[in-house]
Length: 397
Image (cartoon, rainbow, N blue to C red; front, side, top):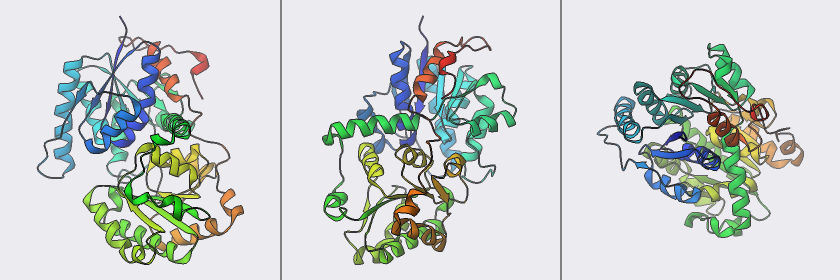
């Protein structure tokens, strides 16, 4: 009897990074079912359509009266328990460091279902940075049977926490798989790219100018951090007349309102060069990433996607759990201080040589075959025994 694998996902990055694995599992004859955990449905459904996925279990909305992490966790745990109980999978896969990943893993553990952790081993070493993601992913590491580490550094972090070497598989990151595949599809079919109204004039304003993509949403930056980033972006547009900034704004009101208020004056001065939009369709995001001169982001996923296209990254955080990008010369951690952001960004925008020096020497996050490796490992594993087998040719990227 073929194995049944449940992929649990709820946020935009989870869907993007799990989609290649859904395809890879089905390609080798495993039964793959998706549990959508209920966050961001308005963003999630277009992504599911893009990747040709129909969730087997779809939570319409999570019952939440307030915004506390405890309340979110309780709702996710209950919904995950019901979904896993109904579907009875042999394996539950969770991705990364979200609350949906943690509570789906915990529900699977309670039901004695084997757990695989995609993008395992990312660590900053600071339990409150990022918050609560650093603790989420560490706790999943105590529950998982398979740890699919994207890099050697992630593998070493897991070994340092006492995870058995046989349970850790360095496979690369499925973000690279997704970005490369969608970029190829978008190039072959421009109609796949859904440009939001706010960016309809981008083809007019961008030619001959340097495109900068900005994203910021991390909880630890809410308040002053987002305000400081908005200040830096506004100053950058004032000081660099050949720059066009595209900023897809996260829908969380604490982020959205701070960005709109913080950039209001600069947008009045430069309405065609400081462009705010709703979150981008993924094919649109990938298209802009490929065209960008520079990316400024606090998103882990965009760090990986930018590396796939050789686009330099300024990391708008105090730390990053993806130090490989920095080590390979493809990014700089600048935090949210406006002066640090400006003093780092401006030379990259005024010098081709400076920009070329910040292109990663190699993509540290993989070669686009991570999903195929993970599927092969799961296919060759006995879910009822502690021992694991795997194809030697697919062991590492």
